[in-house]
Length: 407
Image (cartoon, rainbow, N blue to C red; front, side, top):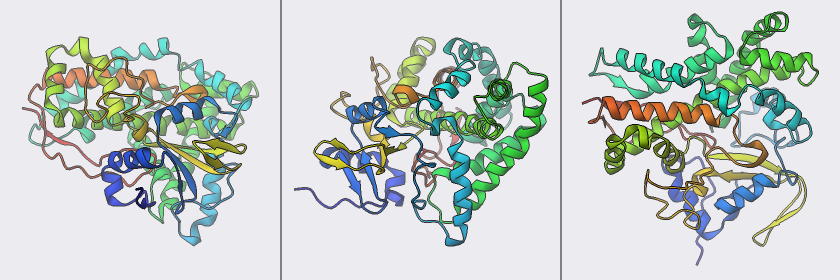
């Protein structure tokens, strides 16, 4: 008999362990209507893939085309700020459907080809070495989030954006404010809009410069899209902040969640240590499956659709949960077991279909090089605390810190 499912997805229990909660929904009611937040919760791997590949029926323009209030509820005094957020988010290219999405993605894709992203590997390896060398200077106080997971993607993204080293702390500060997009605090709009406006103010003069003197960086690519009439200036600015957020938080989470998973599964750490170069690719893929950086993505139904006997109405909110799909027993053998020898590994940590993550290659490069470097340098690496505190986000799977012992 199906028992009542608590629809509050922001309880401490659900934030701490989404796998038990969404796994239960997957088993009992895989297309679940969440009454509290008025949205459909999709939890099975095959359903998620089907949704992503039928993009005509499920719109990505969730901020532009959804007039309903924010969820969870925000302060009534911040409703005007939420309108600002809706307009800001709506200018991201991932918030568009075809044909606009295709035209925008083509411009951005010229920068994010797998071959060009692979060329960043030497810089990533060098940066990891420098960061770990610096961390060793005070081995009694090493926090892998603070000392490695945060500065590494900030460094890479700053290089992609052409941001000087002296301004990277400012970029990190803005990124932290932008992370409020997926959180549940009722006052989250204030910090979120501060981060958004801060990005616009920071990037605008850089775009002016790149319009006249283009460089080999991401902002120049977007500026070229503006000159070609594909992007407006506002879209250039907003999509620069998308790079900062998407390439920043997800990589932090991959590094921290993956390292923590290895610390909790020492047999897998031993396998990785035995052949770091040979196993780093599969180890990274399993880290992405086992405890993925992104928990869920939202869509809007573009038309009436039936799924598993449920009637999804046009304009209904839909949220698919990667956390659940990546542990679907109908797709993965022993899904709750970390196994870095698992192959093939058809996880959906980067989504699927026309909106498959453009930054997947560079995220993989960073994950591979971090896990191999840690295993080679610190074979006895241990987390000082396996009971982590997680950010209250429905979008990201983010721990707050990761103190470790190097030996």
